[in-house]
Length: 254
Ligand SMILES: Nc1ncnc2c1ncn2[C@@H]1O[C@H](COP(=O)(O)OP(=O)(O)O)[C@@H](O)[C@H]1O
Ligand SMILES: [Mg+2]
Image 1 (cartoon, helix red, strand yellow):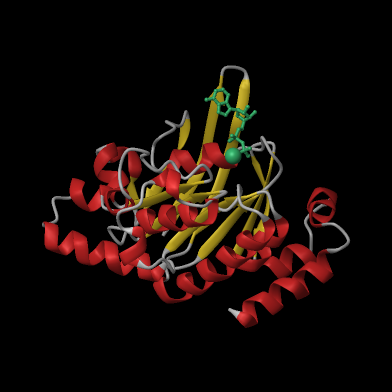
Image 2 (cartoon, protein in one colour):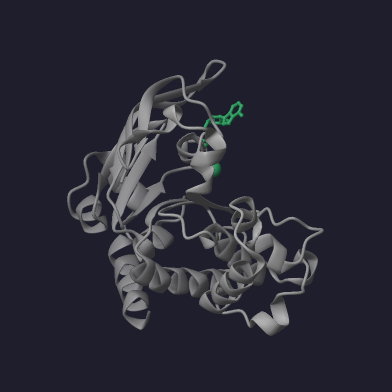
């Protein structure tokens, strides 16, 4: 479980996150949704302490994240981003093995885990192990990014617009596959996006953010059927009922 309690973060005069509270239940996927600049990335990065907060508290499994060594903390948190951030000079195999190597796993265990992860994200190990990032398509690189985030089997996953840079078809396919994977893995996930359909496809809970604050959180249907205010209503828009049906169809296919 991740508990974000009254968190505020300022950059100079900008209040990026403003007294924000949210609880992400164990084994569930919460989508942090909202317009560009509303504070999603800052909130996400506060959890693994890539951003240090000004006030409030973040607990993971009941432990204050600031009471732990930041590097230690990050080894228990998988992190994936839109630009993937693969190390360009390293093979796919070494990229995925980054955290297990830091954790001191032996070579045999790392090799077995890397193969297992590539298969999990739908890439043939024989083909992809030796490749370098510049030899991958956007979708392949994103799969490798997800594999790397999962490498040491962390209980918590933070994903920041992980499929944002992909064409719509590849994106939809990876969303479906990731949704299927999450049903099996049951990680505690905070997934940032500004895309309503993506949120509806993946979320157990949606937390909609506006100007650093929580506008509303709850199961997707609740935000749709019982919006807290006009902002929530207008964010989902009138096509929402159609989008919900599309998302449900994708979910059934998945
Ligand atoms: N390192 C930074 N320095 C200054 N301002 C920042 C920094 N990071 C984010 N901000 C500002 O904080 C606000 C929230 O940004 P961000 O969390 O990236 O939003 P989102 O991910 O929702 O688009 C924006 O106004 C942004 O310009
Ligand atoms: Mg962002």
